[in-house]
Length: 358
Image 1: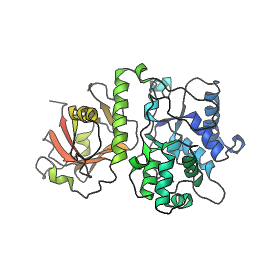
Image 2 (image 1 turned 45 degrees about the vertical axis):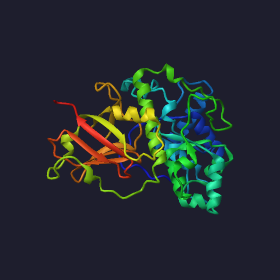
Image 3 (image 1 turned 90 degrees about the vertical axis):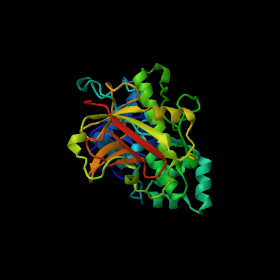
Image 4 (image 1 turned 135 degrees about the vertical axis):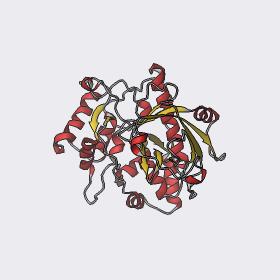
């Protein structure tokens, strides 16, 4: 089972109804088995897919999603479906359907997902003479889910699941999985669900949401390709500024920065448009709850990055910006408004320049 995030998660997630129903079918979960939050989650999924409730997603906290997943434990196994497997792909969510009117319709949280190439997954497993049962033991992912991935019945997974599987077969995520293209009609949904909900066109979104989607695509690409660059590196070697002063958490809260990311390893397959967009920079704000606010062009409108794995902290006097599998560590005196460092895999260089209170 995927480990819980260390940061307290009070977010409400966009739960995709089709995934709930597909999971119920795959793990033989019936309505009569369910209680409390798990029962409500399932009932809402049915109501949405049958048109008896407005909206396209269920709105649930992680604890409720985990309650439902606890019913996927099958006889003879302690493993359950990872809770992320029921959460909507970030690029599919229009950010218009929020939590509730009393919260200002705050957007729901989502996860990064990738599509499964079942033949490549099977080939990678067989190359190491591993069975699906072996992969299940190595990853703590339920056997039923792995078999459904290879058969095509579960065509996409959360990036956290993909990373575990790739590690177990000693390859990179990009060798087995791909970024889903939500603009293509060929983007598949899990089989045997009550109905397919149409994906909203990206053209219908406002400019802020389009830009946020772009950064999530980039983060997916970055997360997919770089497990093979595991060179140990002390990022402090490239940190600008004197090393005597410590960064304090309270001094970083609500600070606004302009951040640029430059490709440091020319062998990484990133397209030119993505390189140019990152090198032009974006605005980030470091909020008190360790969440990062982001916008490519407008420093006054900075919605939170929806991934709970994207966060920041101050650790041993260093400023650490975590973008999931890519982590940047800065160490500089507080009066130094410009800092530079490499990520731990030597893949990218990040330059941040403080722009508030100037």
